[in-house]
Image 1 (cartoon, rainbow, N blue to C red):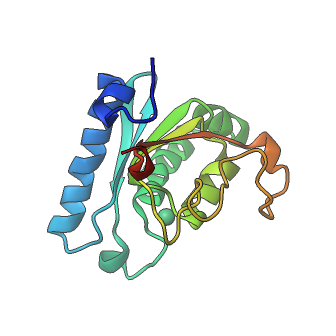
Image 2 (image 1 turned 60 degrees about the vertical axis):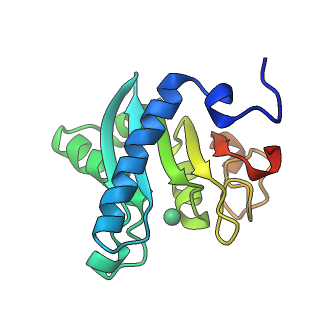
Length: 165
Ligand SMILES: [Zn+2]
């Protein structure tokens, strides 16, 4: 039975925590490269199919967040495989994203538009968070200026909800 004051390791399955550890490993790679340490892995059917880390400094491109890096890996693969736009949308609809920090507003909007299944994030992002901290772009009740956002909702789960301690 889940309780609000349960420790994260008690509230989430070993599988979820294991994937988050892989995202943390990506964040460590980012830190080693003098980037803001954020990492992401994308999981489909219990398998990691892509990973990414923050590369904003390296690329001198403020949009190269971990989620964007990871999903671009898949877009390149799937385009090379000749998948149609509909097939790509179908594939993203069964993907789970594990990110060490709550996706920012830009990334949350992108994940909503591509229609991912769900996002697990390690901690809230109280400056730029797009999954509840600032905006709730994952929510079907979002008032964001995204057309048909109600059809694009994904579930978001925060592993380290500070308010639960
Ligand atoms: Zn972002």
